[in-house]
Amino acid sequence: MRLVLDTNVVVAGLLWTGTPRRLLDCAIDEAFTFYSSPALIDDLVHTLHYQKFVQRIGRFGTTPSALVAQYSALVTLVSPTQVPPVIERDVDDDQVIAAAVAAQAELIVSGDRKHLLPLGSHVGIAIVTPAEALRRIGSE
Image (cartoon, rainbow, N blue to C red; front, side, top):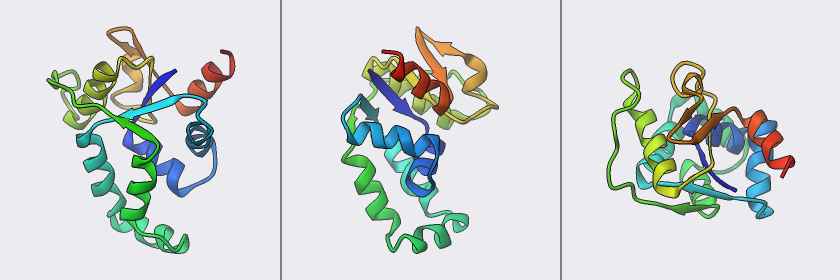
């Protein structure tokens, strides 16, 4: 199964235990393939430098760069040829959708209840929560 993770899911998986972490663990075990794009990796770099994550990252004795490298090792990069405007109020979400289309993903996994999750799907790609992604993966 081909998945694209929204940055909020990646950060949660890298810094906390729980469902997003279980998704990352499944990728480590090669249960499915994660796809990302240079724009999404850049967004991850930017997000991990937020002040609110500094202390949490320090507790792990690591750095944002090391976490990005760890995640980058789990993903296959795609380069979308275009980024169509789908989400008016958050153009960063358009990058998630563009990566999923370029990767021919089956799922976009997000915690974004404001913009992405309400769409439900885009061009046949389901947009689901981490818990729903695990349910779908487990049923295959």
